[in-house]
Length: 281
Picture: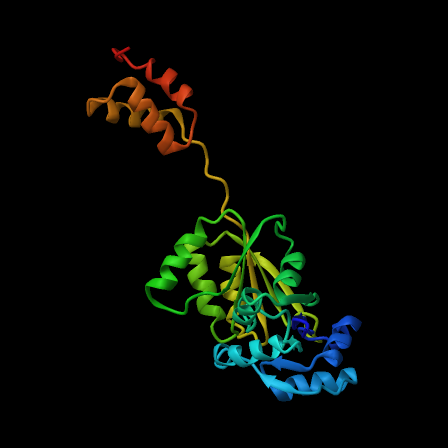
């Protein structure tokens, strides 16, 4: 009986070649085939690590879907397949997600050699809250999809992390300032782990000015989450209650509606309703 194959996701450096883990080197040397975005770039990495790969297979955004059937056949034959991207961890805004899903669905083992990740590196260096965050990859480039995503993220209470190309970062920061408010805090990481690594921190308004210098290199944006909404004041609750009562609602129903809308205690709103003159009991 042939053993089931194994798919191994191998994280590779995002800039500093010294970040390639010993276990990553072992898995790349052991694999029957190494899937990669760019055979020349991965070839240089393997040469640096002293690894002579048995075979390189091109798996990028354009070829991943078409390559899956043949790779599954090789896994069925018991082979060990490693997948890397140009930098970082496979499957995070890079090829790998669809192959992992297909391999898992076919019952093959999926292993991970953890390591460099621009998302995590930028987040922990940002100085912004790290306990809860959301990763957005690249924002939609234009149109309704972009506007809708910005509107959604403007209300997101968790820290937001996204990638952006240097030639688009000025426009994106301007759009973020307009959607999130110019005073929202942001950290911009550039060229992480490389010679000219930079972490800039400030407000979105100041970030727009920073981007006017036409920054170069790989960029990750880390934006502070939306602040908690201020609790409604008593005047706003009374106005909403009066509006509901004027429509013929009972005090109980009006209190429930207003409490739900403002996210406050129904009991507190009910008691407030009874302070109104001639409020029905």
